[in-house]
Structure formats: structure tokens, C-alpha cells
Image 1 (cartoon, rainbow, N blue to C red):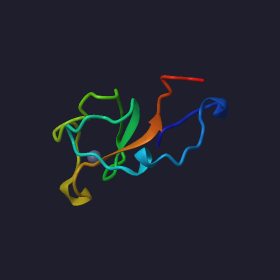
Image 2 (cartoon, rainbow, N blue to C red):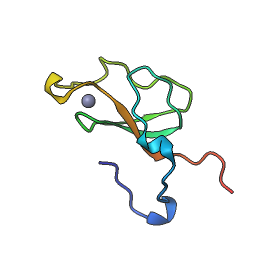
Image 3 (tube, rainbow, N blue to C red):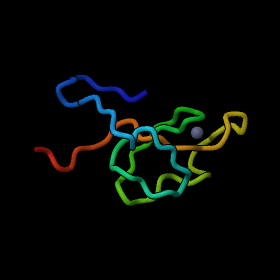
Length: 79
Ligand SMILES: [Zn+2]
């Protein structure tokens, strides 16, 4: 699970992009931390670049397909 120390730097959001599941190699819709729905492994990916491929990590077949979910989105345009 992603960790943080100071909650002044994170903000809860209901933006639908957090509900989307992405296949290995799909382009990341946002820069940030993504979590494998099956095995809970987390990675950092950049917006517009491919999410890690199928062979990226040890992922037991019993856990289902690798599907990436955005869990923390980086703010590139602070107001
Ligand atoms: Zn996995």
C-alpha cells in the first residue's frame, strides 16, 4: 500500500480516472502510482507512457489478469 507522512500533500478525489482498470502496456492516463489489482504490487508511471508489461513482475495466475489502477495522481499543474 502506498505510504505518506504528511497529509498536507495529498487530497482525496472522486475523479473517475481512479476507477479505471488498465491492461499491461496501455498508456498511463496520469503520472503517478499504479497498483496491480491482483497482487497489489505498486509502480510509478508517467502520463502517456506504457504501463508495465505482462512479464513485469511475479504475478500468480490464481490472482487473475494484471490490471493497473491509478491510486495516487501527481499534480503537474498546481493552482
Ligand atoms: Zn500483479
